[in-house]
Length: 437
Image (cartoon, rainbow, N blue to C red; front, side):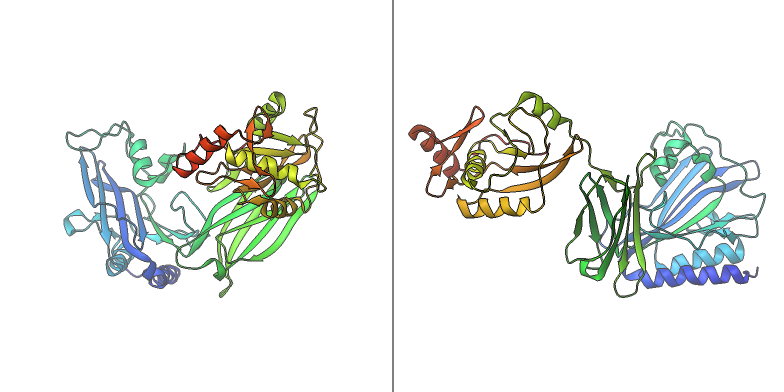
């Protein structure tokens, strides 16, 4: 049978993509579910996919249930090409041997939507081109029965639905629509992707996963809107595997794309839209902070201190608290809360840099800490999260060491100091304080 011009063009594109990305592939994988109908064995669903270099290969298998067969085999690039050409020319789906080949209703043709690159889909968690081959009319409209798959020596599936979820990762309510005889060819692009898009009240973070490119080979395009309009529209070059961009308001819409700096190709995209029920994969929204509300009710403690603002004239106060936290259980300094535990907010511009400079210049050695901006009651607060130090005793220059006790900082007694040095020197750390609020 002669292949149409349109199908020849699509087939050439598929083969070109596979050849172009072949160095990143370990193997091709064909998975087929076929079922026994009145006329004979029919293809229910076949997926042809590729495993990336150095990734573990799935084991080949043949499951033979009374009225259903599952085949999975590994394919080299030449075998993939032969399978596709036989599919279109002979209308035959090869399963490894001529005896297992499935005759399909002619003509088998590429679906019109087969030229679409998808950043993510039910077929692949990486960006990929997804092509679909459909048999001729009448050969793929019957559905296999949704019945239990039971055999003495094979995996048990309570219904066909569980087998489809296990073998193909398809768990939607309309899963039966996938079982109409289609052959899906997935050509993944493993160069780079958005590993995570984190949307928070005051920043947006994009984590990159680069397998065959470096972060410096990429350009990050970021757009964000809030309730009052556009917040961010930036083009970012980075050498790091993540990008963090501050925003002045809580985003209601965020979209990010990563682009090849050399070719200009859009390699991956992710988007967040507030208020929708479904969220794209790898999109995370930082949750609200109910723990902070609880802290406001319970007040200062061995691990929490409130400050209305940063006292730049007496930076030793900040240093004492940071050192005391590091020498005890760790803790959090919350800026923007007054003495009555009311959230008043604070001017955060440049504040984190000042805190960093104070602690580095006044503490010996400086404790490990991070700063974080959160929004509470529509006001911005700055959190300084200090980790407990497992191996050294920290001091404030010219003032000595401090510990935290009953919500205040004080110098340790000689016994407490000896105990503190003993624990640090022996490598025994005090209990860890969970620093995430």
